Image 1 (cartoon, each protein chain N blue to C red):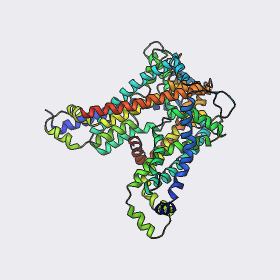
Image 2 (image 1 turned 45 degrees about the vertical axis):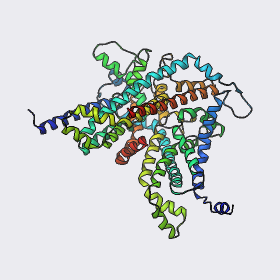
Image 3 (image 1 turned 30 degrees about the vertical axis):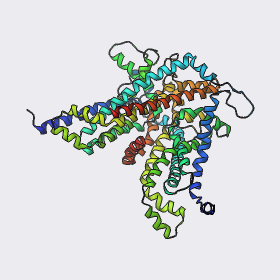
Amino acid sequence: MMSAKALRKTKFIVINVVLAIFLLFTLVPVYVMIVNSFKTQNQLLDNVLVFSFPLYFRNYVDAFNRIFPFIWNSVTVAVVSTVGITLIAALTGYAFGHFDFKGKGLLFTLIIVNMMIPGILTLVPSYLVVVKINLYNTQFALLLPYLATGSVMGIYLVRGFVEQLPKTIFEAAKIDGITELQCFIYIGMPLVKTILTTVSILALLNVWNDIVWPMLVLDNDNIKTIPLGLLEFNQQQGANKGALFAGYILASVPLLLYFIFNLRSFMDSLVEGAIK
Amino acid sequence: MTKEKKSLKKINFTPYLMILPIMILLSIFAFYPIALSVIKSLFRWSGTFGNDGVNTFIGFKNFIELFQDEIFLQSWGNTLFFIITGSVINLIFPFLCALLIFSIGNEKISYRWRVAFVAPMVVPSMVVFLLWQFIYDVDMGVVNNLLQLFGANKVDLLGNPDSVKWAIRFMGFPWVGGTFLLVYIAGLSGIDNSLREAAKIDGASALYRIFAIDIPLSKPQFKMILTLSIIGEIQDFVKIQTVTEGGPGYSSYVPGLYMYKVAFDSNEYGKACAIGVTMLVVMLFASFLMNVLFKKEDID
């Protein structure tokens, strides 16, 4: 008969082993990517399952030269739209949470209803609008629609947060004679900092991973984002596939760094974003 | 009267000014396109504005044509396959993994597991698609390398109409990483632990507790993930476009991909809008169905 303590320990070990198996299978594509990024074409033709020696590091140089411009484009678009989305969400969310004004309910509904409109419905007409207003093949063709549709959830999150703030904080400040704008910047914003972090992380993830929209509106290598660059690289790189895998890894680095340095808030934001 | 005048004078314009930017953006990039897609679904439209090009009202003709269109119907058939298999997978695998992580009972270790399962999300989805395409590759792919080791014949999983949908579905195996896992864990952590303790004292087994407490009380999470799965499967065509382009033939075609081709290959923008509208209707119906389904069960 096992003691209760031994039983608990066995249970603990079994759970961890099962989870480790799950994780191993989850990481198969990552493993494939790493192993093959160090191979010459001949080594690749020989096997794709394990490391081949000597490791071929030149792939990374080749891939860097090919992929870096796309990474830079993606980083630019992602940073600018994330900052923009966070600003708009803060501004608009604060307005709805802090003020009482005529038409508030209707305006808020008009914005929030976009959370229920699937992107696929507007894909084709949005493309035509972008072409019509001469944004096609410019970075604004990405940026402006991202700001529009990407801010909606953030507005919802910020409003919910601002509404819960005690009104007395603001009243005291207003007696001291500060303006609405100062009130927003110096009192409102610091108080909603955590929710703004969530908003920015969710925005970043969405923008970074978007494939369809850039594919539709960008046709110029100088501004194409990573997914498009990788697709192109993939189609052209028949003779040296190893560099392709090195490119995949390089393309994963920016978000990996961001993830490592913002671990806690990254994890919290994912849950927050899904539940709301 | 005087009272109204007084309140008019006192209108504070600050909130309106703060809302203005998003309203302008949404008007151009959301409200207008939404209206366009609904209205133009009733037109034969060459995608132009103003007087040049084709722009004829044809009533429901686009929809009638679509429902007589073999490719369109097959696309929905394929999507149905992806919806059903995807929903079953998302209801079972991440939940199982969440149960395991939750039952560790040590916050620090459980957090590390969560991080480990979320970390692969940093790989861009395009890379994931291309990697799986490579895994299935006929000439040098991982699957065929493994088969060769065992002396088996090569298989073309993506090139065979019988296997292509299953091969696409298998991508992402064992389907436990990412957001859904975190949602389930959050749900499990939200359940009052005294319920589990009480059941334990009554001598209920761990398995019994899962079926009597964890599963029924995770109903909101199941509902949410089911809805998200269905909506996601209906919309997601980039994966298929990247990996198989809908082929071989039309055996992995989906409505989103068809919409894309109808718009940008044949320039039938009115019809493309009509496909978008059918997708919207199906998604709305699915969300409605989920609400009804899960409400009814709650009453029982």
